[in-house]
Length: 619
Ligand code: AGP
Image 1 (cartoon, rainbow, N blue to C red):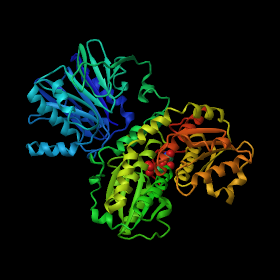
Image 2 (image 1 turned 90 degrees about the horizontal axis):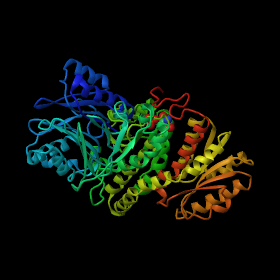
Image 3 (image 1 turned 90 degrees about the vertical axis):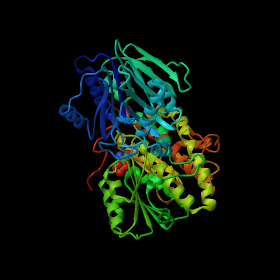
Image 4 (image 1 turned 30 degrees about the vertical axis):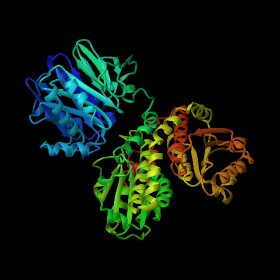
């Protein structure tokens, strides 16, 4: 998620530059790979932008100072379309003379068609970004309206996707115009100055009076005024409030931890990973893969390589990919793959899954797969990282930067991206596989709202976690796609609360683990929906009976309306109904919340657990 800052106010002693650079520094926590600033300098727009960290931008400005100004916008970019380069950094200029500057947070879903239209009109592009399309559109509209607010209004009507835009124009010093759809934008209300930010951290050093903009709204700020209209042009109001967080809390958006914040960001992480990857008719479009359809059609074996939580995402995907494509799909821990002399050739697709794109075990597995002649595709959350560069192709997740060491929103985004890859392979096979892919995509689009429903039901789970803070051991059971969910639930508890926890395939119980069951032993059971094939639901219900009969404390994650579990459950945690293969995107959420809350109740640092690093860059 990019960082956005806007300022209009006195030009005294470099205020604008200080405000923007300070705001960008406070937004660094959001993660970024380039930064830039644009100001109105007399009768033109001046800008500086550099890839890398803010220090590079500061050096650039020191070397080529900007004049004092009343009007400035600043941006830290988390790359989505186009790598983290100087040219792709924001701001982007619009119009033949570059008299407009624009910055953007989000994804413009229909930028391909808009860029094609602009290229046909003779517009030249300086970057690979979707953002530059918006800059040229606003600049063209300004040539008709000679009013920046009207130009923004005309432009947003043509944009699909998620976006926060800020723009300035050399003809209108003292004005910054912002627009937001499915992406946050907050106004900082000052005295003789006003501010804009992707969150209050951008301006909390200057004012605590804020106004949050609603969906599909445009705001125009001057040093003495703030006006809001809807995308339909009618007057509108933002929600005013006083920011009582301190600066540190502001970085977490008011949450107690990045972990808690990122758990709540999961509906957006899944929705943003789906954005821009289907046509209006639902057909999947993964042009970004840049692998020929023939090469993908020739694939006769898939091996997923990853570590930790990313490996569990792969395990979930395995069930779906095999079902949809009928291609054998193995999941291998990356650090085992290289040493087992794997059977790999030119028609093997090796898919690496990695949030950081820097995990050495996974990187070495990808290099080994390349040496064996496999087609390698990276599913990664970090643009420009090493593993995508070593792969033949990449499918980025759009979870935004994941700051907490324990992975949550990246996990759901990884599963989503793996589903997209599997559905795309199925679509290439045509016939019933393609029809099913379309049906699944329709169900997948409903998942973000269902995740939000689960998040809205978590009070009882938090209460249970506080009550269980002294637990010494917790077990997790699941079958089918619920098995990797059980493994992930156990991993979350281990790495956050330092409690012994173990995930099992529920069918494995009678082959040994049931010996662990004693009175009071807490056991989470992930129950497949009653409509899951092969009578799996009934089998898991009988597993619950088996452990309950031996005194286990059963905490059951079950679908809405599933009454069969009630007689054997000490706690029932409900999730909305969804097709069997998509259920992990919902059933893992209570386990994440439980682990986070229990660790918090123990007074532990959930963002930086002991002994762990966010990216394991050694073997
Ligand atoms: C997840 O909670 C852990 N922090 C860890 O297992 C992580 O998933 C694993 O190290 C892989 O990291 P990656 O996704 O960046 O490759």
